[in-house]
Length: 361
Ligand SMILES: [Zn+2]
Image (cartoon, rainbow, N blue to C red):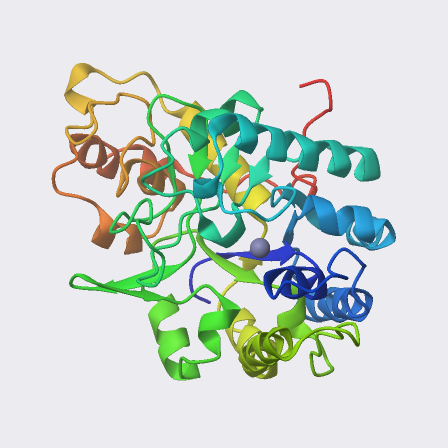
């Protein structure tokens, strides 16, 4: 078995989103397919013996409260995907904070749990939104999973950075989507929408070389056993219908491959939740003794363990040698860890898969 990967679903209603995107008037209506998609996902994850992190979209949760309950009953982790699925870079800090608060209120009302994990719609925390992580930290989140080193994402944060890490000067961890690098070229491997275009041997080979704790993400519609149809109202115009048709063709292509590729990945990598990885990384960081000035990260000037984009947090998280490939030579913290605490790492017992914290926190 190769290294662990973090399994996630962005839990959203494809019909709601595609109707809104093409300007259809009935976009708020709950779509007809999320129930069968959810049951398919839950059955597949049971078959694979994997627990998953569900990043719940607030507006989808309000339209499908019983499905959120099904996910919780099945033992998966509940996290937050925002409320209205608007790109973070189109919002002000106050608007973003309100969107996250609204989603958390919905999730907490439906599940009794407050999520500690967040993923931005379309990975839209960018270099232009440096305040977003502070908003998440202020609202009590423990980790963000919005970093995706994909060439098609504009102004992406963390482009060229590597692996899971604690963000400088805050308790928030960043747990990025799995991506391999060849020289300066990034190969995104963690998203099912990319699996539609990437040969399976390349996906499997590349995942052996991603930094530890790489994230995988799927959408419910990518696991739909039936073809997707946007089901617009009869009065919609030709332009709206054409846009919806194009989007449907794209999504059906991804849908056809996702299950088989995930089975192949699960045969080679243990799949765990983001909450489990976050608990392990936090535990390792907390167990590291106070360090001297000589262990300050020379790249970020941050003495907090896990500060370095390449090495610090990752170094302490794995006993294997594979992480060494990803250590930045500029980081003296990594050099210190290399000789010490990495070898003392032991994986904690599995804990509550919900990854939730008490509402009062
Ligand atoms: Zn989304």
